[in-house]
Length: 333
Image 1 (cartoon, helix red, strand yellow):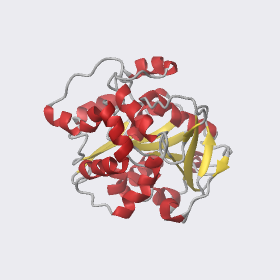
Image 2 (image 1 turned 30 degrees about the vertical axis):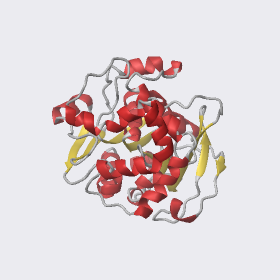
Image 3 (image 1 turned 45 degrees about the vertical axis):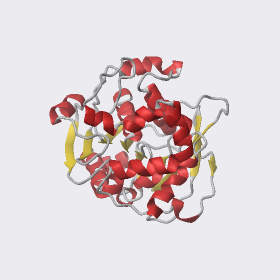
Image 4 (image 1 turned 120 degrees about the vertical axis):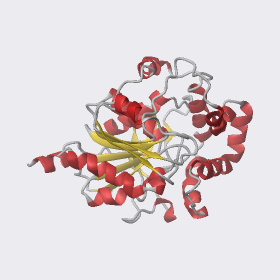
């Protein structure tokens, strides 16, 4: 077996296939046809995911953010499949058909939990090593996995850069423009915000799409295909906990306290990485200085800022994202 073949097959073992869902209509459509939605059980979750490409290919995991779902990667996936890779697209906790296994479990979503979900997902599928790309919540999960489990992550494309948070110490106020852009976080930290998200989840999420990527003119059909995932019964509780915990207004899971303390130190990411930014991101208003990225990513392969693009880079510039993933993996051969 030559090095090229080994790298494509080396991260894989037999898929632990726990169950399937029945998907209908275009909500599951991909360029290759309609994939069969699958389910894998991890200790806390039954994670819904989609799989594409060669089951013997080296695995690439694509992680969506808030408020989005697996459809974010529809146009990123085909070039990766054509290159011979196995592409896995899970739904994060609180989205789509992903469910908590214990009906009595509190619906928490601190950063350490989302990062552990990624490792648990790989473990459930018996994947020893993988490449990952993510943005927003998914980008944070990818950062955490790459920082804490570099033996598991061969390469990472991180849209939005380094997003690991310090949830231990109170954060200082930002400049007024940034504080205004984060209005939804302050809203979700009130009971009025919880009630508002429960009553208006689709309209709030659509407003965030419009303001976070002002140059992206998506159709009603595009939004509606993803908004199905916001009907998850855990969506509101998960979102509220995520935004309250990061600001010290909700307790985390005791099992993650040591991890959160470790993350508060902003551990460096040593795996080969590419960071991508949309210059017109309506929530992360300004990319950090390149020196900041170089300090946090010790194996930074590239750093790109794309004019005209906003927060939802996998949807707005899918070719950029797929090319970045392929560049990292091809360079590693």
